[in-house]
Image 1 (cartoon, chains in turn blue, cyan):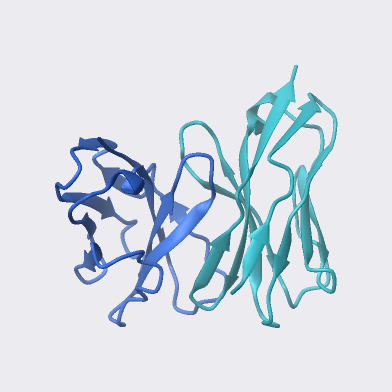
Image 2: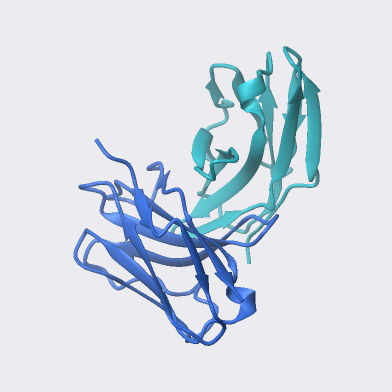
Length: 116
Length: 112
């Protein structure tokens, strides 16, 4: 079956514009994560969706960032009024989790966002 | 807050040799999981190995093994018989509940 897919793979936008990044998780995976990876750095947790529970938004860096997920399917990460410091690779991962414990996260290839 | 530290930004190993990547973490939790992920230039993150904190036995996956020292909060990755395909960024990660944190990564170069 298909893995996690993300679109677009690359996005260049002007400062101040809004962008939407899309993530298609593996079918049947209940959990979905968004991460930000700045150049040369590790992954920074942004948001976590698990089934019908309220999402964990504790990692969102500002109110310009938001994310939605419809049921257990597609998720979109929206960044409003983009700033240059938003330039990064945004990674999505999904997981078959009925418990937080140990289920492996499957990552998408990421979207490289460049804000000029 | 839980932190994950990888003190080696870059490492190099000769093909067929063994290399160890270091990772330390800070937590007040007793139940957690530790992971090593590999990220090749394609950006695709791949799980290499996973360790449950409640298990004393070190995890092993083929050429990859860990040295988990819970009291010292250390979680190193050993790659035996290194291959050219092992060249990548390696990230150590910690998870407890919804809290998932990654180290800054170690870039591994494999010399032929």
